[in-house]
Image (cartoon, rainbow, N blue to C red):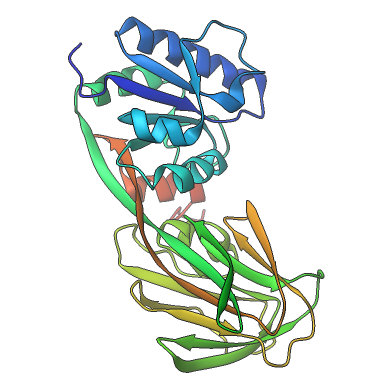
Length: 292
């Protein structure tokens, strides 16, 4: 089989033993195709079959042309934050729950991957968010997210006050449990659960979704992805938590400022040729199903 992918990374941290079987099946199949396979080194203690070479995520990003992420969307989010810094393409095999990003069924994985290795795939680049925390103008923390940045109080079930500035203009102020800034990719994740809209993945837009606002008039807001969002907390007394994809969490003080902008990094997601985004929505969310 002729392929543009001579080196492929295999990654994804399984929560179930059955998922490791998918790692093994795909690994042996790739090797039979004459492909050099780099397996994520975090899997070293879980894999029981012989492996050509283990490598950390950064090295996979540098050396491989394709990364196959096996697991749920959480595994894809973790991999994407690393791999977005490199030109590597990324595809997901679902061994989790919904699988919006890991959309290849493990039951059809070999057939679909065979087509992808022949060049039969669709590119679907997704941009990331970059979050920065400033203390009197000094940068103290920064992080990246594929789905969303969430600002919330450090104590559960408490309300915070925040002022939202868009491109340095005061847009609005609210009292709420927190605030979600989501990408189109993240519009089907936490923001959706909080009442935010679904955005088609290629829109150049961001969603600002309040979490349980103490108001009858608060609504989600969609803005350009190029807009700079700054958050200030002038009357909030509680410490804050800033979560990137719910996987990396930073602490912040209420007198500090949080800036969120579109990152210059994108991760190069690909799909099989038969991928249908809207069918994916309907299937996984029960969207537009008739009531009987």
